[in-house]
Amino acid sequence: MKIVLLHPENLQRQVLQFMLEQAGFEVHVVTGLSRLRREILSKRPACLIALEDAEYRQQCELFGELRELEFDGPILVLAPEPNVDSELLAFQSGADDYMGSPVDPTVLIARLTRINARTARDRRRSPRRDTPSHSRPARDHTGNREER
Image 1: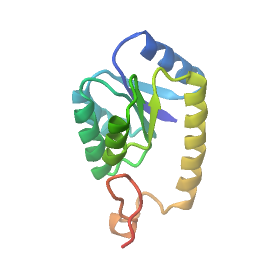
Image 2: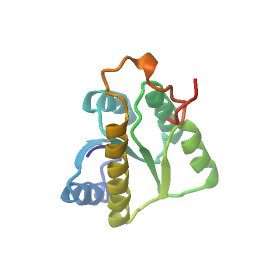
Image 3: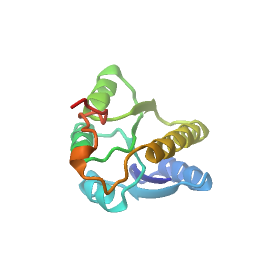
Image 4: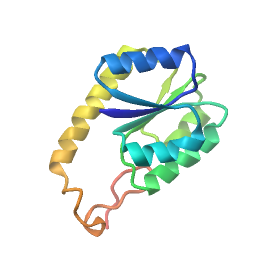
């Protein structure tokens, strides 16, 4: 499973990256928002993990843009100081999960393993990717399927 990790350069990020790689995940680190859109579109990861930081509102705006660009992988937000307003903003912008940080890497790995299994199952059930987009279900801003 390929993961893009939006996280500043620090010891916590290094430990998290190491643990994810040891668990068999392919991790691509992005340290700033300016490169995130390009990385998501070029790497086509299965998942985005973002650390809430000073640019959090801009991060959330970008989550919405990624959903509009049909990035349908899970977006997980790690929050050093979790609060209800930030959590709601994350979900309204398209995030799938919001967790306090630092997160226990074993819990995160278990969650990602579960997501990966569910994603693989969903891909086997869904139409092929080369199917014209008009025959695939539309998605709302949260990534959920809309009825047409």
